[in-house]
Every structure is written in C-alpha cells, then in structure tokens.
Length: 58
Image 1 (cartoon, helix red, strand yellow):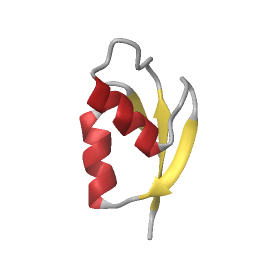
Image 2 (cartoon, one colour; image 1 turned 60 degrees about the horizontal axis):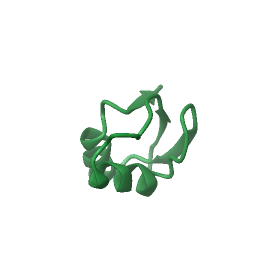
Image 3 (spheres, helix red, strand yellow; image 1 turned 60 degrees about the vertical axis):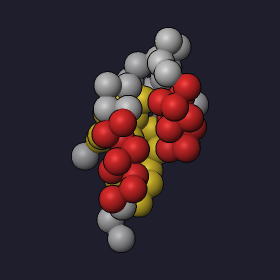
Image 4 (tube, one colour; image 1 turned 90 degrees about the horizontal axis):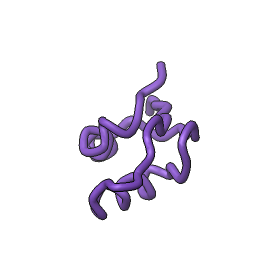
C-alpha cells in the first residue's frame, strides 16, 4: 500500500473535541510533527475532517 505523510501546521487549541481526537488518532501531538501512515479511504476522511490543521506532504 502507498503511504502518505501528514504534518500538523496549526494548533488544536480551540478546536472541537472530535477534531482533537482525530488528530490524536492520526498520531499528531504537536505542531510541525510529521507522521507517515498508509493511504486508506478512512484516513483520507480523517484528514478531510481536520484539513485546516494539517498539511499533506508529497
């Protein structure tokens, strides 16, 4: 499977609880942290939910 790199670019302070939980489920804990995960439809949905807090790196 292909992998995708995700970087947290904005703080989760002030975000709703479900978005904070989504960031934790993606493995992101602090700003500028980069995680590499498998590219699946469920993870794409999670990224879409917090698209304003993260960036996808090529």
